[in-house]
Image (cartoon, rainbow, N blue to C red; front, side):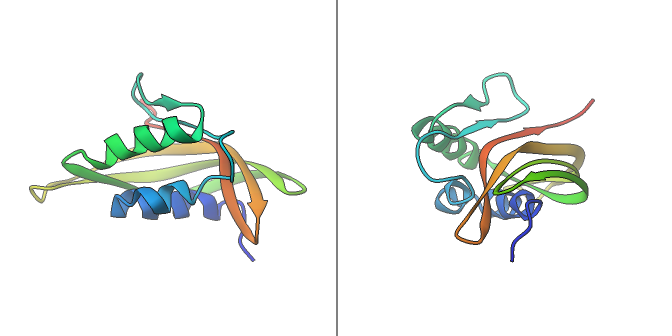
Length: 126
């Protein structure tokens, strides 16, 4: 069975592949979802807005991903708060790679055996 912290890597895989359908599948069903990224304009508070935001991110000339280093999970039944420290990486379309510290946190829900984000925030600590 899936664990709450699996939601972190599932979303990272979708980001790495720039796969909008896979990224949206990482979120809970319905429109009551949210996503916030590192940049000021990277906030979305329903499924159409999350789809538009992630779609725009995936059109950039670079792909993002991260690998979890550690995770703290506070589980309450079928919901869990997840906080993960990660190593982020950006692969540009010109072949350059850059790494950076990254954090992913939010509320995940168990649905059909898989943990999915209700709200997710990714950020680059300074």
